[in-house]
Amino acid sequence: MSVLVFPGVRLLDVTGPIEVFTTANEFGGRYRVHTVSPDGADVVTAAGTGLRVDLAAAQVQAASDVVVIPGGPEWPSLIKDDALLDAIRALDAGSCRTASICTGAFLLAAAGLLDGRKATTHWRFADQLALRYPQVIVEADALFVRDGHIMTSAGVTSGIDLSLALVEEHLGADVARAVAKDMVVFMQRPGGQSQFSVRTHTPRARQEMLRRVLDAVAEDPSAPHTLAAMARRAGVSTRHMTRLFHDEMTTTPARYVEQVRMEAAQAMLEDSDDPMATVARRTGFGSPESLRRAFTRNLGITPGAYRARFRTTHTAGDGKPA
Image 1 (cartoon, rainbow, N blue to C red):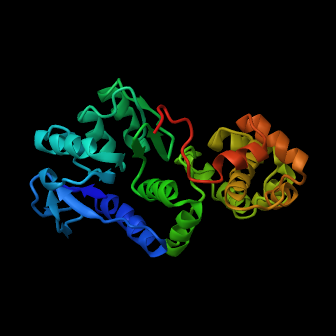
Image 2 (image 1 turned 60 degrees about the vertical axis):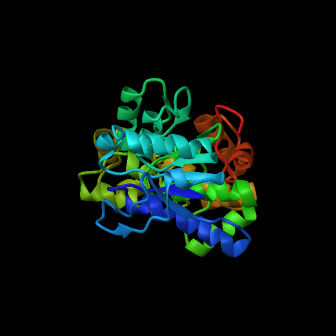
């Protein structure tokens, strides 16, 4: 595999995927990792760390199973670097898979490789990707997206998720899980999963009393988080608790609790073979029927169908066959 580097590249965009693939070699993989720059010169990352380069892009002769295109904070100037874009096109032409990390999607788009394809990038830059490159179908909320032989990922750590998906594609789910366990990272983040958790995409509560309630729900979704119980925890009336959720969280207490429980249930279904009764009990739904109704209402599918779809890292809805 080849990892393209350039001055100002984000360090974790480079090292995260390299760690995944080299760790996979301990479990039967045969990845040979090369760092490549447009001219073969060593580079200094955005963090100020120097990176040694193995080859110039023109020296890469053998086909690469994977070409990784990292991002960098100076992507607005990088997309105007003709030598860099030529290197990306050349590397892509000889790759089985081309994968971008974070703002590396802008480099792929500038090179014309995302035209007519689905793609993602860090949520903070998704609107700009769509605005600059209207021919790209931007999926702003996804961790990573595969369309044909090209994959794009969101923020820097999602490059690890994408790399685990590639290891699973090449070597199977058992090896990918072994790599994830060895690296002490999660395996249960499939490409179709949102970049955000319930706590990160809801507004931050201004009132300390409400923050305590939200923390209690997140820490133990299975507890009896009724309106009365939450009001008692905060030391306010049920009417005032309802008003706090409306004013600060733009939702109702019951809806918020259900969202947290849904997220917990999704994680259990992705990462375990526990029976539905166990999943329902541990995530606060109580019964498999209540769990089923919640999944059908929120996601349009049953818990069993969700488990079948998201049990591995596989991306959903590929735009083109691989």
